[in-house]
Length: 290
Image: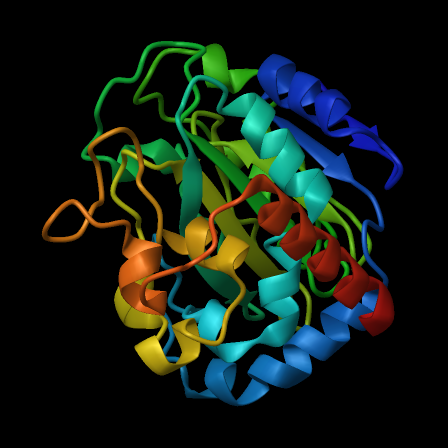
């Protein structure tokens, strides 16, 4: 089954429908390639300082650089992209809220073999979530062109409804080939894995993942984003990284205080109008960077 490819003008509903049906989709050229180059420039020093993986799953020729909310203004705008947030909200319908699960540049170096095929939701201690119940919406932005030769992610469309703990080969999967500025969306249940890099150049992908707020985050955003940085971020971004309640009684501080109020102090705004304004500002920032 081929990976469905959608135009940048598509709607969040159309994206979420593809994710519910196939477990994955590509939105081509959602942002200009120049935006990706800007993000790479912002993060180049951090990527160079990141050690390669310590096992075959992490990739012994692959660097995984996190902490991107604190380190990159471009990444902060990308993770608030209205199309992505809208599709995520529809895919994870039924949850009181969703939050940022992890941020990571995945730099697959030349000579890296293919990653074992897996489900990302196995990170939740291999809990057997019911078929069709999605707990994650993952995005992998192409910072450079993704090709079958340089390690484009491999995915088995429709496998989000297959049995758990299957052992699949790369030959069972399709390559998520796409030009820089495109984004590959996939659910936590779909089987996938990083491709083998048989080229002479590094493949750079930007992994921004969201999950239902009652699940523990893979990347600890409260320690990844220092308080002095967090206090300068817009309210909507703070809520997205976890400064909000995950449900009626999850995530409050001491005397049942709202976490955003604790960070900001009394009088922190919490209105739908404020949230919409933050999203509009993020979209405008992306347009300017393009």
